[in-house]
Length: 265
Ligand SMILES: [Fe+2]
Ligand SMILES: [Fe+2]
Image (cartoon, rainbow, N blue to C red; front, side):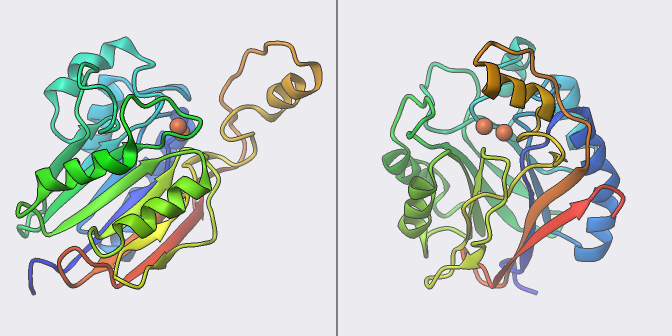
């Protein structure tokens, strides 16, 4: 088997303790079913719905997660700043300011020697990122050139236009471009003509019975009254949402399959 043979399980934004438990319960099932070479998880909402802590990141790595990506909530918990600098395989968006804690690209290696480059990138539309995504991704890919068999880009972005455009921009240059941030999965997973697997949004791993992770009553009240609301994480109807990307040639995908699983399913 060549070193290009691999499969990547990518799991969308893990929301709160319910999302973490859903992931940890279903990961053994998904491993048995799909035997992924790599597991990459977006953890930007893992700590009570906002941010991530060193303890939670350690817990995810201990469960066999190879790399953790983040997004606009990367810095919600101050105690993670030093952890982001110290740990190679946890990423905040690459196109943040260089002065901000952490880094946006890493290489992880499977037991069989396959090398996966992971890039976390933030959109510029409706989200705050200090540098432009579309030029910074070229710099990030330059850093990975010649060092990896596959590349996965987690594009943490709000606007579908920006996400679709990045998919086309990177088609044929990376193995997969997976969108995150909206917490709602899209139905457009496919391999683009030059071989890059693409989906606009993977969705979240958390409570489908809320409003993108928040208790629905609180969210609705906010929209009705226009008054500030205290938001808590919903505990209704947890699901795992992810994608599985299969590959047999360097930097190309053969297939992308959407995984939408109820907790316990
Ligand atoms: Fe999120
Ligand atoms: Fe986000």
